[in-house]
Length: 393
Image 1 (cartoon, rainbow, N blue to C red):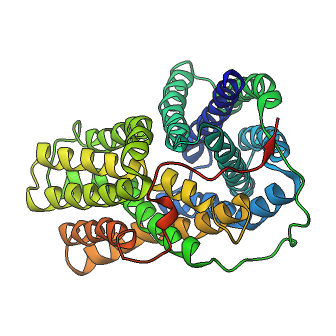
Image 2: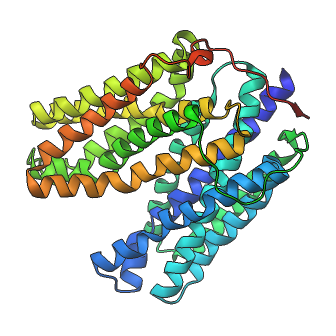
């Protein structure tokens, strides 16, 4: 058990590493916009490179982890992630930056699949849900990365200088962690780099992730706009809605495992969907500042466990290996993140922003409904215990 605890700590550091890298890029986006004199439209187009790279990497990540094991992919992916972060700082034109952003997005999702596959092995060793705590550390790294970014800007350091510091931190974490990672047993044939068809379990849980990511995208892109245009909050208070949501989502991931072990993953997903729906409806029905912020707090707690628990369930698919299953569910889920924000804008154009948020509230209810429909698909997930997965030290 002592070795297993060390493995968990080591993997926690790697999740923190991944979140720190992403936040380091995000914290310097305004600097890149100024450096290359990009309009809002040009910047928006450039930022599409991140989800594009993520989608391109999904089948590659699933295949690579399935064929070579998550340990090898984590080590290689961490080094390439650090290099891709540095490449952002080396760019000298908007075109070069666009290409670098696509590659950075690819490396980020390769890390996502490999880290979560490794996390499933650690979770199986504990024989209880712990996946959300790893995701909580990724979120916590976002705050740390934003703080480091603010410090670097205050010191007037260029993005490249900033990224050298972060790359050094990443290398230290990797060197101190990789020997403690599980080595999976050799799999006989991965089936090649091909697209797979999700079974009933993966399709259902993928849709849960789809609606969860749609709600996350709503908060990421539109919470500030909602406070500004609907609530008419003062400019200095507008960021508080997003910060409240992020803080609730990050902190919620540290105790959602405990609740999932007590009540089961399915019950937690039902509660999560209900919290998302309730929080958004509060913001819609009572559009004052504090009620809206309270609603965003509930949405943060609701979204906290949707993706971690979805990944945990998907990793136990009987049809595919954990890495392939995670890639399939991530693909379905990720489209929710892509489609959600534009859908909100389209509905707001036809009606108003309150109607948009009410529609997204129904997406939260869909999560509860998807895991409540009486079928045999989720029967094995109504108890906290997880099925063992073969691994060697």
